[in-house]
Length: 239
Image (cartoon, rainbow, N blue to C red; front, side, top):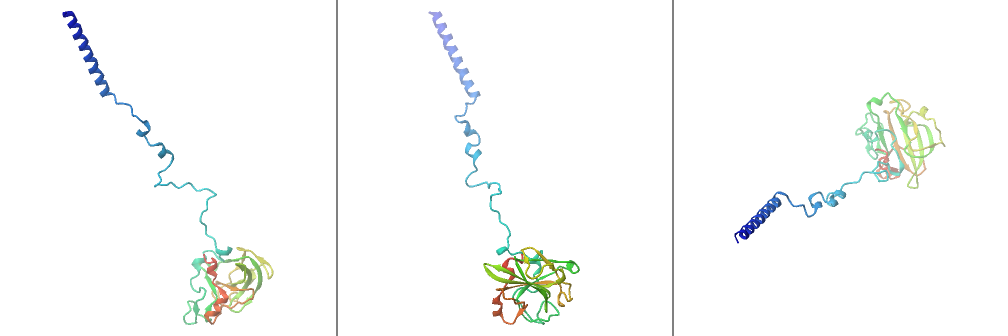
Protein backbone atom coordinates (compact mmCIF):
# COMPACT_ATOMS: atom_id res chain seq x y z
CA UNK A 1 0.00 0.00 0.00
CA UNK A 2 2.80 2.36 0.95
CA UNK A 3 4.51 1.59 -2.34
CA UNK A 4 1.37 2.53 -4.28
CA UNK A 5 1.07 5.81 -2.38
CA UNK A 6 4.74 6.64 -3.03
CA UNK A 7 4.35 5.88 -6.77
CA UNK A 8 1.23 8.08 -7.00
CA UNK A 9 3.06 10.92 -5.21
CA UNK A 10 5.98 10.66 -7.62
CA UNK A 11 3.63 10.72 -10.65
CA UNK A 12 1.75 13.73 -9.26
CA UNK A 13 5.01 15.55 -8.50
CA UNK A 14 6.38 14.81 -11.99
CA UNK A 15 3.18 16.09 -13.60
CA UNK A 16 3.29 19.25 -11.54
CA UNK A 17 6.93 19.88 -12.55
CA UNK A 18 6.02 19.32 -16.21
CA UNK A 19 3.12 21.76 -16.08
CA UNK A 20 5.24 24.43 -14.36
CA UNK A 21 8.01 24.05 -16.96
CA UNK A 22 5.50 24.36 -19.81
CA UNK A 23 4.03 27.61 -18.43
CA UNK A 24 7.48 29.16 -18.02
CA UNK A 25 8.34 28.32 -21.64
CA UNK A 26 5.13 29.99 -22.89
CA UNK A 27 5.95 33.22 -21.03
CA UNK A 28 9.53 33.53 -22.31
CA UNK A 29 8.78 32.87 -26.01
CA UNK A 30 6.35 35.43 -27.64
CA UNK A 31 3.61 34.00 -29.79
CA UNK A 32 3.89 34.39 -33.57
CA UNK A 33 1.70 37.24 -34.98
CA UNK A 34 -1.57 36.19 -36.42
CA UNK A 35 -0.99 38.30 -39.61
CA UNK A 36 2.59 39.15 -40.57
CA UNK A 37 1.45 41.94 -43.00
CA UNK A 38 0.01 43.92 -40.11
CA UNK A 39 3.48 44.14 -38.57
CA UNK A 40 4.92 45.95 -41.64
CA UNK A 41 3.86 48.62 -44.15
CA UNK A 42 0.62 47.53 -45.80
CA UNK A 43 1.00 46.25 -49.33
CA UNK A 44 -1.36 48.95 -50.61
CA UNK A 45 0.96 51.68 -49.24
CA UNK A 46 3.97 50.05 -50.83
CA UNK A 47 2.44 50.20 -54.29
CA UNK A 48 0.11 53.20 -54.28
CA UNK A 49 0.35 56.56 -52.50
CA UNK A 50 -2.52 57.57 -50.20
CA UNK A 51 -5.34 59.37 -51.96
CA UNK A 52 -4.88 62.56 -49.93
CA UNK A 53 -1.17 62.86 -50.85
CA UNK A 54 -0.89 62.15 -54.60
CA UNK A 55 2.59 61.95 -56.04
CA UNK A 56 2.92 63.72 -59.43
CA UNK A 57 4.20 61.56 -62.23
CA UNK A 58 7.47 62.42 -63.91
CA UNK A 59 7.08 64.62 -67.01
CA UNK A 60 7.27 62.96 -70.38
CA UNK A 61 7.75 64.25 -73.90
CA UNK A 62 4.07 63.68 -74.56
CA UNK A 63 2.86 65.95 -71.76
CA UNK A 64 1.75 69.49 -72.56
CA UNK A 65 4.05 72.07 -70.98
CA UNK A 66 3.33 75.80 -71.00
CA UNK A 67 5.33 77.72 -73.56
CA UNK A 68 5.66 81.40 -74.35
CA UNK A 69 4.33 82.02 -77.81
CA UNK A 70 3.41 85.30 -79.46
CA UNK A 71 -0.17 85.52 -80.64
CA UNK A 72 -0.85 84.78 -84.30
CA UNK A 73 2.75 83.73 -84.89
CA UNK A 74 4.13 87.26 -84.57
CA UNK A 75 7.62 87.81 -83.17
CA UNK A 76 9.45 90.63 -81.44
CA UNK A 77 11.52 92.81 -83.79
CA UNK A 78 14.33 93.22 -81.24
CA UNK A 79 15.75 91.28 -78.33
CA UNK A 80 14.47 92.22 -74.85
CA UNK A 81 11.60 94.02 -76.53
CA UNK A 82 9.52 94.55 -73.38
CA UNK A 83 12.36 96.51 -71.77
CA UNK A 84 12.57 98.88 -74.73
CA UNK A 85 9.04 100.29 -74.70
CA UNK A 86 9.74 103.16 -72.30
CA UNK A 87 8.97 106.44 -74.08
CA UNK A 88 6.34 106.30 -76.80
CA UNK A 89 3.89 103.41 -76.65
CA UNK A 90 0.92 103.07 -78.97
CA UNK A 91 -1.78 105.75 -78.61
CA UNK A 92 0.13 108.17 -76.38
CA UNK A 93 -0.70 111.81 -77.04
CA UNK A 94 2.44 113.79 -77.83
CA UNK A 95 3.09 117.53 -77.86
CA UNK A 96 6.41 119.35 -78.07
CA UNK A 97 5.97 120.38 -74.44
CA UNK A 98 4.79 117.09 -72.90
CA UNK A 99 6.75 114.59 -74.97
CA UNK A 100 9.09 112.22 -73.10
CA UNK A 101 11.55 112.85 -75.94
CA UNK A 102 13.16 116.28 -76.14
CA UNK A 103 13.42 118.15 -78.36
CA UNK A 104 10.13 117.10 -79.97
CA UNK A 105 8.86 118.23 -83.37
CA UNK A 106 5.67 116.14 -83.64
CA UNK A 107 2.21 116.37 -82.13
CA UNK A 108 -0.68 113.93 -82.08
CA UNK A 109 -1.63 110.39 -81.11
CA UNK A 110 1.19 107.94 -81.71
CA UNK A 111 0.18 105.29 -84.24
CA UNK A 112 2.96 102.87 -83.43
CA UNK A 113 5.24 101.66 -80.65
CA UNK A 114 8.80 102.91 -80.22
CA UNK A 115 11.49 100.44 -79.18
CA UNK A 116 14.44 102.25 -77.60
CA UNK A 117 18.05 101.18 -77.66
CA UNK A 118 20.16 100.42 -74.61
CA UNK A 119 23.14 102.70 -73.81
CA UNK A 120 25.65 100.10 -74.99
CA UNK A 121 23.92 99.95 -78.39
CA UNK A 122 24.42 103.60 -79.25
CA UNK A 123 27.42 102.84 -81.47
CA UNK A 124 26.65 99.18 -82.17
CA UNK A 125 24.74 97.57 -85.03
CA UNK A 126 21.24 96.70 -83.81
CA UNK A 127 19.50 94.18 -86.04
CA UNK A 128 15.78 94.44 -86.70
CA UNK A 129 13.76 91.30 -87.48
CA UNK A 130 10.49 90.85 -89.35
CA UNK A 131 7.56 90.48 -86.94
CA UNK A 132 5.47 88.51 -89.43
CA UNK A 133 5.64 86.83 -92.83
CA UNK A 134 4.74 88.74 -95.98
CA UNK A 135 6.00 90.65 -98.98
CA UNK A 136 7.83 93.96 -98.88
CA UNK A 137 5.59 96.72 -100.25
CA UNK A 138 7.88 99.73 -99.87
CA UNK A 139 11.56 100.30 -99.17
CA UNK A 140 12.66 103.94 -99.25
CA UNK A 141 13.51 107.07 -97.28
CA UNK A 142 10.58 109.04 -95.85
CA UNK A 143 10.18 112.24 -93.89
CA UNK A 144 10.05 111.60 -90.17
CA UNK A 145 11.57 108.14 -90.53
CA UNK A 146 14.71 108.22 -92.61
CA UNK A 147 15.07 104.66 -93.84
CA UNK A 148 11.72 102.87 -93.86
CA UNK A 149 10.34 99.49 -94.89
CA UNK A 150 6.66 98.58 -95.27
CA UNK A 151 5.56 94.94 -95.25
CA UNK A 152 2.20 93.38 -96.10
CA UNK A 153 1.13 90.66 -93.65
CA UNK A 154 -2.03 88.84 -92.55
CA UNK A 155 -3.69 88.85 -89.15
CA UNK A 156 -6.69 86.57 -88.53
CA UNK A 157 -7.18 86.29 -92.31
CA UNK A 158 -7.25 90.09 -92.60
CA UNK A 159 -4.69 92.23 -94.43
CA UNK A 160 -2.42 94.47 -92.38
CA UNK A 161 0.50 96.76 -93.18
CA UNK A 162 3.58 96.86 -90.96
CA UNK A 163 5.86 99.90 -90.92
CA UNK A 164 9.46 99.70 -89.70
CA UNK A 165 10.91 103.19 -89.29
CA UNK A 166 14.40 104.66 -88.65
CA UNK A 167 16.37 101.94 -90.44
CA UNK A 168 19.69 102.22 -92.22
CA UNK A 169 18.38 101.82 -95.75
CA UNK A 170 21.72 100.59 -97.13
CA UNK A 171 21.65 97.64 -94.70
CA UNK A 172 18.42 96.23 -96.17
CA UNK A 173 19.39 93.71 -98.85
CA UNK A 174 15.86 92.74 -99.92
CA UNK A 175 13.65 94.87 -102.13
CA UNK A 176 10.00 95.54 -102.79
CA UNK A 177 8.27 92.36 -103.91
CA UNK A 178 10.59 90.10 -101.91
CA UNK A 179 9.19 88.01 -99.08
CA UNK A 180 10.23 88.35 -95.46
CA UNK A 181 9.46 85.47 -93.13
CA UNK A 182 8.86 85.88 -89.41
CA UNK A 183 12.22 86.34 -87.70
CA UNK A 184 14.16 87.23 -90.86
CA UNK A 185 16.69 90.00 -90.39
CA UNK A 186 15.57 93.15 -92.20
CA UNK A 187 18.53 95.40 -91.56
CA UNK A 188 19.95 97.54 -88.76
CA UNK A 189 18.80 100.69 -87.02
CA UNK A 190 19.96 103.98 -88.47
CA UNK A 191 22.57 106.18 -86.85
CA UNK A 192 21.22 108.63 -84.28
CA UNK A 193 20.46 112.18 -85.48
CA UNK A 194 21.47 111.45 -89.05
CA UNK A 195 19.70 111.21 -92.40
CA UNK A 196 19.26 107.49 -91.66
CA UNK A 197 16.78 108.43 -88.91
CA UNK A 198 15.72 111.80 -90.36
CA UNK A 199 17.39 113.55 -87.44
CA UNK A 200 15.67 111.45 -84.77
CA UNK A 201 17.25 109.45 -81.96
CA UNK A 202 18.30 105.87 -82.69
CA UNK A 203 15.23 103.65 -82.14
CA UNK A 204 12.67 101.54 -84.01
CA UNK A 205 9.21 102.83 -84.78
CA UNK A 206 6.88 99.89 -85.41
CA UNK A 207 3.43 100.69 -86.75
CA UNK A 208 0.64 98.32 -87.80
CA UNK A 209 -2.27 99.64 -89.88
CA UNK A 210 -5.35 97.77 -91.03
CA UNK A 211 -5.63 96.80 -94.70
CA UNK A 212 -3.10 96.88 -97.54
CA UNK A 213 -3.62 100.58 -98.17
CA UNK A 214 -0.26 102.06 -97.21
CA UNK A 215 -0.29 104.77 -94.58
CA UNK A 216 2.99 105.73 -92.95
CA UNK A 217 1.61 108.37 -90.59
CA UNK A 218 3.45 108.30 -87.30
CA UNK A 219 0.78 110.42 -85.61
CA UNK A 220 -2.92 111.16 -86.12
CA UNK A 221 -4.76 114.20 -84.82
CA UNK A 222 -7.81 112.56 -83.29
CA UNK A 223 -8.21 109.55 -81.07
CA UNK A 224 -10.89 108.14 -83.35
CA UNK A 225 -8.33 107.87 -86.15
CA UNK A 226 -6.43 105.31 -84.08
CA UNK A 227 -9.16 102.82 -84.97
CA UNK A 228 -7.38 102.30 -88.28
CA UNK A 229 -4.28 101.12 -86.44
CA UNK A 230 -3.38 98.17 -84.22
CA UNK A 231 -1.34 98.31 -81.04
CA UNK A 232 1.76 96.22 -81.90
CA UNK A 233 2.03 95.02 -78.32
CA UNK A 234 -1.41 93.41 -78.64
CA UNK A 235 0.14 91.10 -81.22
CA UNK A 236 2.70 89.80 -78.73
CA UNK A 237 5.70 91.60 -80.27
CA UNK A 238 6.61 93.46 -77.08
CA UNK A 239 7.59 90.34 -75.13
